[in-house]
Length: 163
Image 1 (cartoon, rainbow, N blue to C red):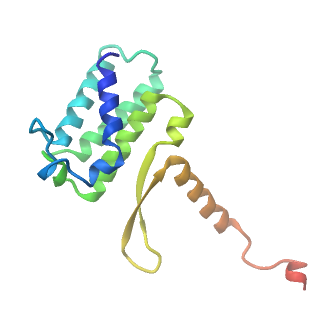
Image 2 (image 1 turned 135 degrees about the vertical axis):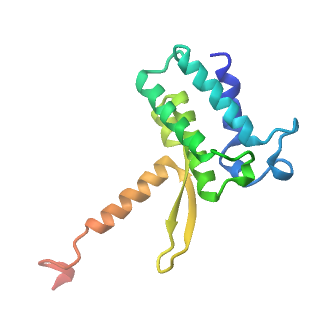
Image 3 (image 1 turned 60 degrees about the vertical axis):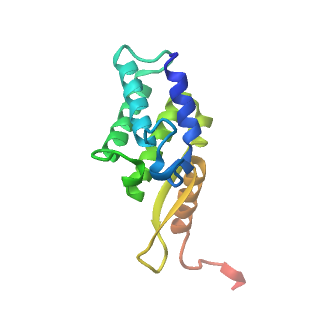
């Protein structure tokens, strides 16, 4: 658990903006390591803690969710040495997976709803994609609003509009 606290603090400090702005040229840290390498080392440490019997206070379901998100982290970073080598889609996958891990380690509904997520969506009338970021609660609200709009009746029934 003592090794977990520095990992959580670093995850928290990276935040969603880390994917766009490097600390120095190429995204290197002060000690010469790239942020991607730091994140991967942290994830390996968390994985080792989980393999050694788990982290205090985590249920098996939460540990499984963390392992699944870690697979996403390692898949997004596969074959890459620096953060700037990742495509925008891979950066989004990486950031979302790190946010899921942080939410599971934080273990609360509020933490999950406040978790920052980014998603790509098509701009209406074009083939361009736009990256939108917000909290999980905002994404769920937008999804439910779109679903409600699609489920509304298309034609006017009886007594519609005063006719």
